Length: 221
Image (cartoon, rainbow, N blue to C red; front, side):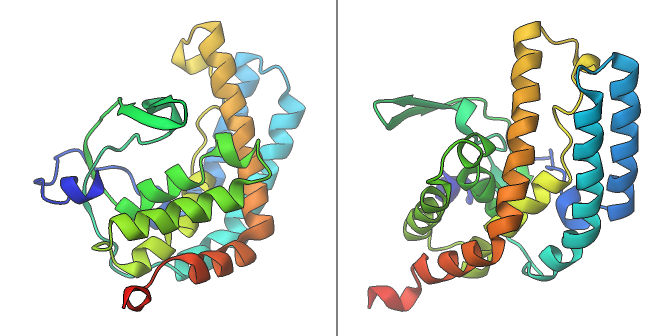
């Protein structure tokens, strides 16, 4: 899909890249706003959410600068699906039979790759998530060698930064969702919290594995 979309004109819609350029202090302030909103909405477990947001503040302050320092200076941008995650993949007996929810935006392929490889629904629920993630990125590299290697190797950093700057699901009352959808969104928030912790706890080793497993051009000679 990325190979084909690379030839398309850039869409007018541009995916937000707060994870790359957003202010850490603004994100820290968002934690306070989210907690205030949850209090007004009568959040079911305000104490747990307060602890999670306190942890998020700490993670933002401690990790964003070092994660950003390892990103390529010029990441490739192109037309992308922009919502390429498990809910938009139709799978039958382990075969992807269709992709839905195409939004179309100008964004970074490394961002979309990282989101797919480190989907919180997998990372938070399976002990095999590091193997799945590195296998997916290695396969991607083989199928799309035109994307610079530096971009491919940065995808885990980008996925983690994206999660740190995202607060989707922390509160749900403002969306006017049906109860079932609100419960699912809250579950996704919890999965994201677990994913952030697992990635931070294993990040150096995960990057080492990625750097040794992703094919290089000379591997095919």
